[in-house]
Image (cartoon, rainbow, N blue to C red; front, side, top):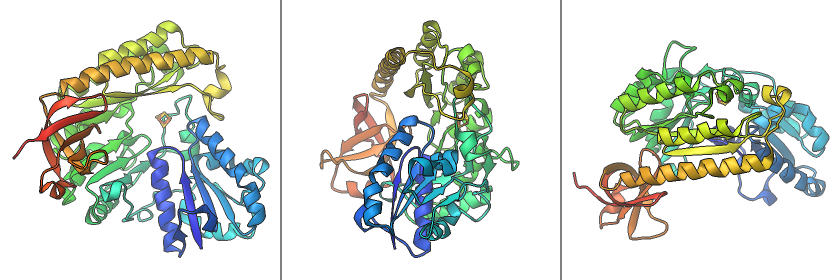
Length: 441
Ligand code: SF4
């Protein structure tokens, strides 16, 4: 029996797909890249953005004639979208066989088996992160260089525009020991960079008397052979001095923080229920730059949130300039069904205004980014070497802690540098790529 999984959405979804693939493989299924030979076609979906949902619906609609020709084929929809919609999906997609929510992945093999004899909906709340359930799996990305570890799931914040707490449930941290063991296993299998994942990763440990700072120290000290450690995504309110100190002091932890602001206006932040004011965000930024002066910070913004005025939008533009973010991900607001904003706040900012704000904020961020990247000229950057540049076989390619691509000359022994950290003096920079030469130890 063969399966194929199509993944839409965030890193958490990609990790979930890997876990599902692993569970199915353990149950005797084989993964295929060819839908024509698949006995099960699975879609793992994101509910955070409307276009991911629409794309998945369209893709599954297209499978209707295929299902007619191959009635034994199982078509499954998993993840946040499945969790949100449940059995209602069968109304739109009568040829669908399986709806599997975010917390039912461990039973995926049994669910697929049942779905072969009739439609199945599995969306009950149930912990996925109980000790042992996710341990020591051997997934990896980028040819084994990077591997994700889910250290916690869920979110307690209830931002008014966000569906995550409803589809992923409340925060649950995995035990430190399980995470350290999993990191060791992944590094033994060849991973060099471990990315610790959580919807609200810096809330890690609140429920188990631990903290992300403590976990970073443990992974750093106890996982032999690990080269770099990252963590995403943080909530500004939960970024503590201890966490910033750990990031700054531990050489293998990337000095990079994703600190989504969402807006520069306190009134908008309140409407979004973000849990901090603009002043509090500014103070947090100041703390991060004071304790980790070389840290690079990225942000997220929503433009066109209900009732956002031009003046309020301009506070976001001003924040991008003031905070000197390395990068910002900008989203036009769209109401997500089931959220407080969708129920109580009319989507009253016209689409063309949202689009114009989106462009203006991105343009401001691009200016800042160009300046910041140019400032790196003449600096020495530590990069994790990924391999030979796909565009130029005479160059090696790696990434800085802030995920900037960095390219340097390939020497005779350069292939031995793959998977190691190298120090590169930057002599040229474009917004996306640094160019430099190796600094010998
Ligand atoms: S912090 Fe807010 S935006 Fe982030 S997952 Fe939780 S509710 Fe959603």
